[in-house]
Image 1 (tube, rainbow, N blue to C red):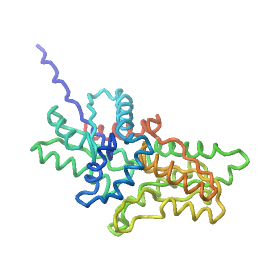
Image 2 (image 1 turned 135 degrees about the horizontal axis):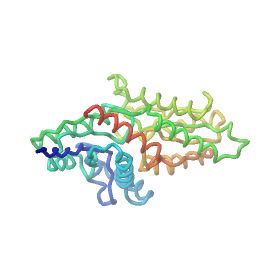
Image 3 (image 1 turned 90 degrees about the horizontal axis):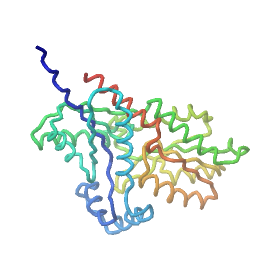
Length: 317
């Protein structure tokens, strides 16, 4: 007589992203959560609401996140182990805390957590991970979580960005392409993280150098900039993109390709901060600025997510 095999329990995969409002009415609550108790002035609320109004009145991030998760889970089907995906947002619905509660309700015992941001920082990825730990405590539950901290040098991710660089340069006539300057960028964070030994800046520059090398750029053909600094009194990492465009214009640069390496899908930091605000600066400087498509569901990027998840799952087996 044979004993039936015990059915293997699914491995939970928790995908996390920043979150974004689904309409303009949600903006006050969304900003209140981001600002964690700091008062949002009427001027800041009006400014950010107007930014979102110009990109369609909502954040496209939840939709793109869902598409990325669906594509990644499809790519992981060949692993053979039962997997179950969950989505949790740091600053809006669906909240990370709710996703963790759903995982506990589903009986998930083992899980992998990945933030849809390739670079580690105590002010970004670590904050997501703390939310998971707090949610487990709040629900008096236990899940054995394995955290993917960063994937900023993964070949598929680097290749996908290098392809964006080439796409952008090809928007210019062939005879002018040697004069095109590529600006690689990511979200700024407060300067204090560097004094604390945070790896964020170092990892960003590692990614940037790999992308530039893979795209075949000359050393003088690309540069680094931060963007989208928060509205708080402390100093933030720079140079900011608008300032950097002015500096490039002073050097005679008239053709620019903007490739954000720290963002993996279209949302306000790309659609407004680059496509609208930076474009306005470029036009004032008589500069042509091209921004190639974001990674979104690019197969190379989806393959990267699947690969790092698969490797982490193998460690748990």
